[in-house]
Image 1: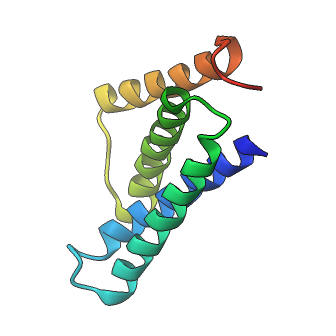
Image 2: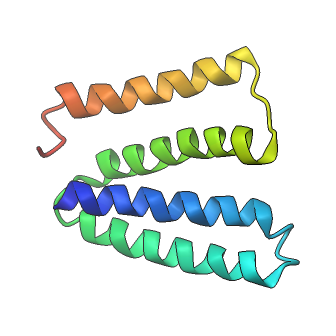
Length: 109
């Protein structure tokens, strides 16, 4: 259940960050409201997940997956291109998340 909560926290963080781009520096009310609500829900779910997952592991997964998802959304929705070093860096982030989940005794399974 705690991994589901963390996954939902990542989802709402991704929604909030996508809306942040769409808010055009908080000049559009609808997307600005989605930013605030998305981040509020995300932090609430992250806080609950922290009862069961060490903060370093949870935050690494939460932020790392958020970075990867936002990079994909930026490409698909906003036409933002990434150069090879950026793609390589994001691949390293994903590798780090996999290493934590597959091999770390710190991460609870």
